[in-house]
Length: 237
Image 1 (cartoon, one colour):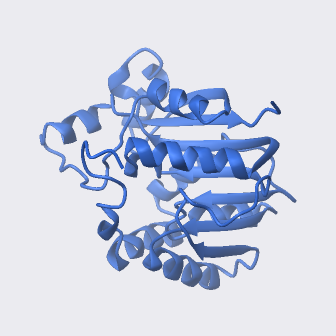
Image 2: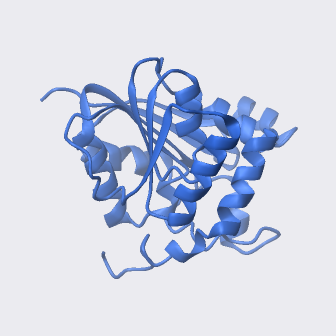
């Protein structure tokens, strides 16, 4: 922990029952937000059937559950007791039996080296300070088998919405978003963990009209870069 600002552990109290209940409701209703989020992340993932997937910061379990539906052996990891409880409830309500959830810190994973074929960090890195991000990425590299894939999905700090939040104009800042980064910053952190970055994309939001603009112009207009989608691979040294 660097002392240069809040750490991931300082904002942990933000993730309470109400926080996960809201995400659970969106997922179970399959509203536009939930559908877009799932589609964006699955656009980055390899085929999952038979693969061992670890979902870091799984929250109420969206990607653990969706991976299990696609045939993966899926493990969701989250340090918040409310997250594991919510994920377990949603799995039961949805009738998903191939997903498992444990309470653990992604910076200190209780998993063996090479235990995973795929690691997902969706809407996690924006909640991490720099030191913790490095630890989480290092642990991800450790638990991946050679040739395994990591997918990161997170807001891009150049987007208009993030600029408005930063300036407290129209949109309220999220106090847990202590590490919103650019795609270049995120890619550099992933490379520093020893992973090979294969792909970086800007992915659209769920909002009508806005997502059309984001799809068309994000590559050239930083204010329209809503989400970073990054895929990296562990290459044998």
